[in-house]
Image (cartoon, rainbow, N blue to C red; front, side, top):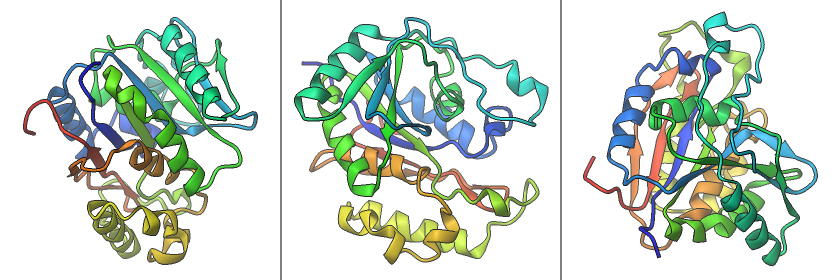
Length: 266
């Protein structure tokens, strides 16, 4: 049995986070230096939602997908050339099927920007194998949490599980770079922080009803669901750490959460 890796939730914000690290980028890099070296990374991004159950990338050399339009040309030149992990993907599919999930490998798909953008900051050497797991459609907070529970055993094999979304994600209200955080973003972020610290799964699953300005912070749910995946993959007794990533463009809260023990104190 390998070292039990922690679980992360990272906010990837806008694609420009790859070029404009702001507060969160250096914090992710610092966090990466304090991780024990993973055997592999498993990342669940808000940008891969599959209608045919759960899918797992199985390419030996997953491509860097630039799944966005209208951004600076320098962004499209970026690559995250981490190797894939086909054997791990096959093992995970078997495990998910054994637990009743509709699961299959995808031998073609690469890593979308919800995966490679934060990994460029967290693990910039791109020398650790990466697989990406889709969110099934339909998916709600309970289903996301259950997916995390199903992924959790991989932690004992030294696999770093990462949920990648954004703590807030209202692109309709994006402000100029450097804008002060909107009040509703601060209120929603504070509510999430208090309930994550308390490991209050029930409240977080019901955030749409309980959290202040939830529908404004998340006009659609997909960027919040990876937090529930990460919480589902955490274990009773895991310590919880917050990495304050600030707020980009006035409305994109960039917090990261760590569930479990780091190799060294941050």
